[in-house]
Length: 350
View 1 (cartoon, rainbow, N blue to C red):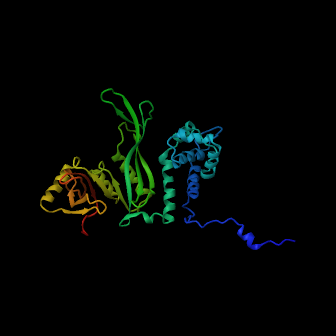
View 2: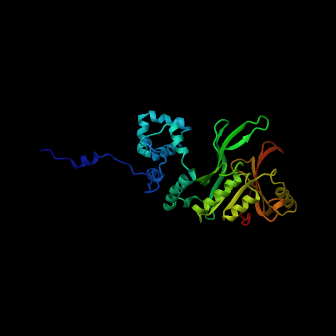
View 3: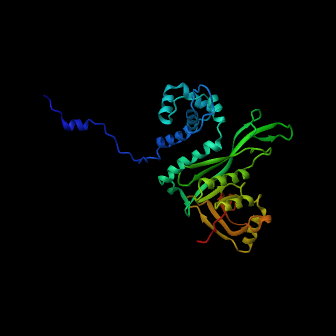
């Protein structure tokens, strides 16, 4: 009777190298996808009769399309024709029946995004908070950096809906129907990952005929943001379309700090005020040479408590201008200027 060689039986086991990534119970992809699907399952069914594609399958398919970065509904629809793709979608996203592109539109178009989809953005956020994964993304003085910007996602001269905004060509009278949104994401310069918050749609509001605008969308966004995250410390980072008095007052109302881009053409009073202060020697100015390229010089100009504009001189902001100068030959060159206003007093540690 042959004896088993214990050493041989041990060595015959398949070696599994230790994982360098420590999977967290609530923060791996499988757990997050399951949590999102559970929320989709709670959305009430509005269709009657025989239902071939369930509501969770339709919504998870839409989620999978963005998760897989497919460029269009039609491209995602091609996955239905591949058996291996169908198996992957079921095992990863739990999708049993994949809708066609037209069926997905029909189902998703009837769902109120503010009522049913907006709360789902809080699900992964709460998991990140519970797993303390948010803490490394703190940007400055305990605050998170929140990028905010408007973007368009639909435009057509033929297809429209009551909530579409309208652009009218002054010469031809042709109408272009379009939709926009105010997107928001927590970011950090040291991380490639971002944490999206629920966007605010820039669309015609109920009972109105006028087009919506980014400023009004921001008001609604801040209201909802503070309902969802009343104590989250934030610094909002926006482009040069945002630095106006009503917007800054709205940020202060909701206890949100800010870094806002400004341009001389849009804020002549502010930049003239700073230039006069520079002539009087009241600005903080210094230069730093680029260690990697001696032909590049970085120049900074800082002034605190600057009136935003002539109409709102009581609204004081702090300005920092950054000039990156590229010296090509002696006494010539090009320069790039970036200026921002912010809540924080600047230059106190210089």
